[in-house]
Length: 250
Image (cartoon, rainbow, N blue to C red; front, top):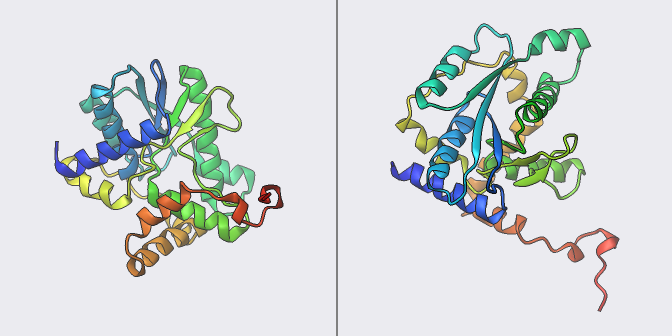
């Protein structure tokens, strides 16, 4: 096992243990978009399963958006070669967007559609966990975005209940892993190219991309930014914020 992947597996194991993500008998549906993060997550979870003291199942799922440029055969073929259980689900995003006359950023509706389909597939396959590939950079960016939008001191939780699907929890095993570590692992795998999303321009112009870039810019000016943010996100002191519900009584 190459050194970067060993470190990634270590951080994954720490996150799984710290946030109690996996228990004996779990059936975990893993969202496989075809990007680097989701492929790395599958590699890490399969490595973890080989050494874990408890047994749990893993099933990968990829949506077919119906774009000719999307490399679904390459993704499916890679899963077969690795011996991973893999499901493919049709999700004609462009057709749905046109049908609904959706005028906002297409990424918003696409995200909702994919999440809803994942919930339905989890229910169909008897999965009680849904594993997603967001890493710490995503969590930090989400926190900053929520803060600046007035949505509260919140972000992507490492282990949270699915709001609209009772009995399913969303887990993020890369919650403690920086994106740079995931990128450093990619050279050891011959991953297929997923192909570009036809809405990539809108994606790069969106708020989430802005805050992801902001994290990188802050990291250039602030030493150990990511570890410092992780420490802060794990050390909530609500009595020192502006919510009167937490007024400290002396």
